[in-house]
Image 1 (cartoon, helix red, strand yellow):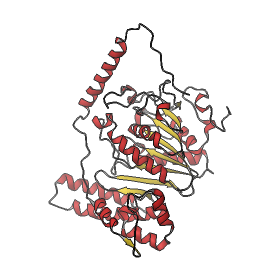
Image 2 (spheres, rainbow, N blue to C red):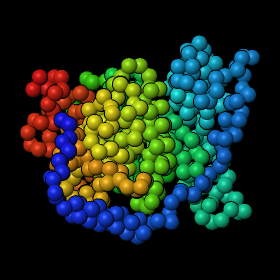
Image 3 (cartoon, rainbow, N blue to C red):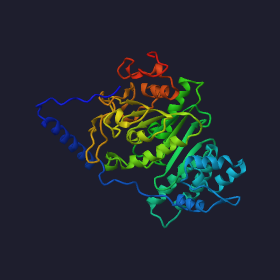
Image 4 (cartoon, rainbow, N blue to C red):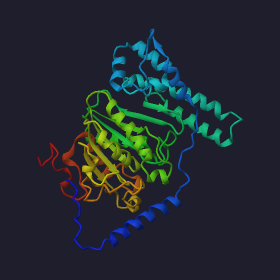
Length: 409
């Protein structure tokens, strides 16, 4: 459903459109000035464990032979680990957890083991920092929070696919059997996402873990026999608050590289659907043209824009879906891009050309994954390939047209 450009009427006065643009820019800069223009970067807390681990890995040997570089291509890493036995993989996971746990191409079970070790190692460091009187009270309190988070992530049975404690940290967790999954869903979250906010006790559904658990539960309910997995992915440094970083694409470009690497490195031949919330949709939009063909669906919810003017501008073979609740404040953010500020056209506008999903019963900007909403039910249907029963925002079947297996085929 390509978006159609509106032709310019000959002789029309261009001033109203220009005035609207200027007013929109004024809103952007007022928003930035009043919501944290100076709060650009998240403080680089924590310890340099990952840097030390990478140094050790660069000279590591396994039975006298060098290991592949930490930035080696996925296929190179996969071939290396395929030639190892279980004991050799375990030795590498235990000896170099903060590298092996993040090594795209390594077997996921080896990465799970490594990240359990890495989390315990990082927890002990943060516990020591929490008692260090040379640190400020604020730094000691931060260390206590981090040690508690690492202990939670290291609980038996959790499948941590990636863990890097550097700065605000990066982490990813798998729900389901990733090796056996035929369909994989990836949650790509927005601002204020780091190790400490990766999961929450209160306001659970605002965290990547809460979103992923809700989606996995909805997928199991929608199609119990489907072999699916869901990844809660906080694998990029996100903006802090609704400040200047959230209005620009700098962090999205770094996140897009990491997201592409994740989708390329997933095991097997599973298809992949991305569920991109808020600023996460900017990351998905930037990544779109570089994503592998196994990514069949890109879904954006509460999007400020995808750094594109329409679906064709994304240059992806994936189906692009969009939804926004009527009470979502993101609708008031000007959908434009000028001088690097703003993220382009509104993905739920008819001109953009996305397939529009119903989000009935979702509440505001953070309610899209709540049980009982049309949005999470639709996400589950996309994640399991049950396209024929998707509920479109327009109340008809237009968002399902052209998809194999739907009633229109």
